[in-house]
Amino acid sequence: MAPATAGAAAYKHYVGCGISRNATPSHVCPKKSKKGAFFKSLKGDVNYSVCVRFPSGKNLCAQAQEAKQGTLYVNKVTSTIPGKHRVTWFVEGKQVGSFVFRVKG
Image (tube, rainbow, N blue to C red; front, side, top):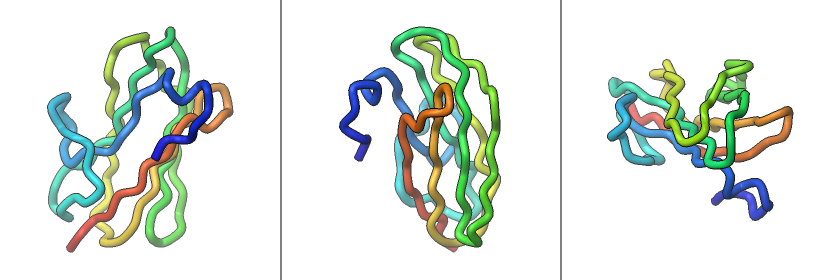
């Protein structure tokens, strides 16, 4: 669930099992599939960061990603570690959403 803040509606974000624009939101991805963290700004051009927390507890972030309004962007999530992953998106240092998905072995 997206946080019920006023800014939450300004962005669309999800994880899909695949990296094409046609990938649909999914909470479980096969280990061998490509995984992508998708982001779209609906209210103007922004810079965003996206972070992935792996089952091991390690956190990896891609900083200062540019997003033009209305364009869908994807960041690859290169993990084959079975278990729960949490992807979190930030705009101007504020969390604008998170999405949990599981890699199944």
